[in-house]
Image (cartoon, rainbow, N blue to C red; front, side):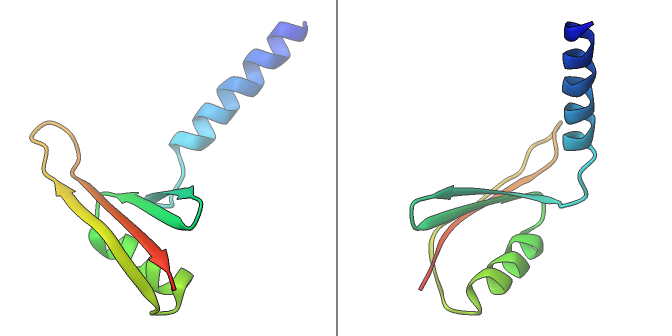
Length: 79
């Protein structure tokens, strides 16, 4: 019974994580942030909201994939 409850909890977590409507993921490392998205506008909006137009772009990359969705990665730091 205990393992059954754990299995249901795990499945629920996976389903909720996959059905998220955020459109982006944020990774935090000390004082810098990394935004992962399919669209650059989503990350740009998040950066403006988080840093109030006072930020430093550390790295910006855009990967185009043929069989997968495109990836946009930007590292930034709020000033």
